[in-house]
Each structure stands twice: as structure tokens, then as C-alpha cells.
Image (cartoon, rainbow, N blue to C red):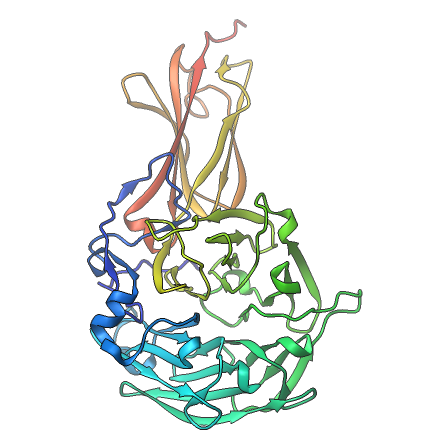
Length: 461
């Protein structure tokens, strides 16, 4: 089951965002389109928050100070049960770690804060991780206090419920826990950094189990980033079920089953980029993994097997640039991504990009040769491949709106017009590949790549 299209007017960042216009349609060949800014009609094109906009909403009550993790959730209390469409905005909780607080939106036009520095109720110390569910439960990795804090959101307010854990090793003890995530089952997963493990607990704080590595000798080494998906989740394909963490100071990604078997690893040394680092993580509908890279101002994307797909962005504060990206959360149903930066946040939709289009030959003789069309997709997409003549008219469709996987894809053509058609007339043509995302961005965006192809006279019989 693929994610249904996004039809609502806006999914709010937990902050007011800068107005920037983005035009729909095909992508420029030189523009990276794995992530996209939403179209102008969605939130009036808004996609970036800055310190100025935070001041507009909250005045001198707070300022950006080491933004960290985020959690995006569609609250049951805001949902209209009479319809299956998405009828209200997301609520996004963002940690402003240096101020020991949570910044969150209570509506499309209102932003509030919760928390202060300390170790009592309603207080945090250097909190780094946050997770939330549709019922309004919010969990914070209160890193400096070596505990997990449970809150409840209702009627525009966050309320303290309880905290569990204290500094140490063993059940009910943590050492600088840095991330939390919630499975659809309600299980809480914790990256217990100082204890080199991932801990699973119930939402009430009851210990379930820990993962420190596997029987093959792989041991977790100060895990920091963490993301989880459970097979019962309606917004994960093929009932995928796994945990992914970053460890070794951001030098490694590790994919683990929930019963502790290592399913794959990836190392920064394998990336085509020097000095990369894996920080925080998110998982999309197809099981692809996104990792922020603060030093390089990028997002690295891997497929569900932790095979490298692409890197997105560059350092800076302009369009498609990232200023020390930190936390990341992904609303899997519609492919919406929220990222915190050094002094703000950004909002993206998942798109797709066609890379490395090439053919096995630039000329084909029908009846004698065939051509293999190779291209690389950065996200699952619906693909159409057509042959276009010198007048721009489509004379043959090789592939018609077929779903293709992330990674390398290959199409073949024998030079004839259909299964029983005759040979294509000789001449100069263009092979055009069009990819349309299966996420909500597919309603307004597609990527296109082209390559020339000469058709020769049909081989004599």
C-alpha cells in the first residue's frame, strides 16, 4: 500500500517559517530533487524558520540555543474520525536543548514552549531526544539528568506525567541517554549512549530488554542517533521491522532487528565525501534511512539495506543549503521531513531524482540490436520512458508509468514500435525518462532526464 496523496493546505513546522516561493513541474537537470520544498499553495510556500521568526511569535521569551531533535505527530484529538483524509495539521515538538525546553505549535498560528533548566518536574538538562504518539504522549531523553521524562499534550499544553531512570548501569538506570523513539506498539526505544546499548521499555517505564550488539562480535559503541520502525505500522512497506542507530562518534550506521540481530552496517569512509558524520536519523515509508551530517551541512540517504543512495544539500543558509543540520523527523504517511539547524529549522517533502542516465549504445538497428537504458533513482517512483522525434512528438512508449525501485534500474528496447509493430523509422531521436514520486509530491512534481539515440535502417533479412 503506498502513501495516499497529501491534500491538506498545510503541515506546520513548530515555528513560523520564512516565505520562499517554489515552482512546481519538472526539475532543472542541475537541481537536486531527492528532497523538495513544498509548492507555493501548501503553506504559501513557507519552508524555513529563523531566529527572526521565532522572535515574532515568542518575543524575548526564548531564542534558538542548540536546537536538537524533533517529533512530528498527527494527534487523535485533532483528527476528524468521519473522514480518512488528513483533516488537520501536524503537531511538531522541537527540542531547544541549550534552553532546556520544548518548542511546539498548538495550532497553525500559535507557538508555545515548555520546560526550563534543572532536575525537577518540568525541567531538563541538555535534552537531546524526543518522541511522541498520536494519543499525546511525549517522551524526552533528558540527557544531562540521565533519565527519561514522560509528558502529556492536551488542549495546547504539555503536562509532566513522570520520569524514570537515574545515573548508572542496569535496569532503570541510564548514562547520558541521547535519543528516544516510539514504535506503533507503544514500545519506547532509548539510545543509552554511556552504557553502549539500546534499551526497550514500555511507555510506563517497565524494562523489556537491551541490545548491546550481536553474537557475531559487533558491539554498539556509544550509540547516539536512533530510529525505529515496527512491522505493525501502517506506514511502512512490506512490514519492515528494525532499529537503526549511529555510533562510534557518528562514524557508523548499524541496522538491527528488534531481537538483536545485526542486519547491516554502513561507515562514513564509504561515502564519496571526506569528513562525513552520521548524527540523527529518520526512516521513510520504504525503509530508507536519512542521516543528518552537521559538519558538512548535508543529509545522507541510504536504502533499506543501508546501501548509499545520495547526499542532499551543502553548507549555508540559502535554498537547499543546511546550516549545521541536527535533528530530523519524518512523517511517513506523506513524506514530510522536518530538520533543525544551528539557528532554525527547515521543512521538505520527499521527491525523487534521476541520476546517471546512460544507454548501452547511442545508435540502434531494429531487428539486429537492442538498447539498455540505465538510470539511478534516489526514491521509489513511477517511471515512463518514451522515444521522442526531432519535432518533439512521442513516437513510442518503452515504459508506461511503471513503479521502479530506489537504486539502479535497467530498461530494454529492440528498436521496434510495440510487440508486433514495425521498425522505428531511421533518424535522430531522444530517449526521455520521467520519474514521478509516489509520495505526496507526485501531485505537482516530476523529474526528467534525456539522452540522444540514433535509429539506423532496419537490418536486412
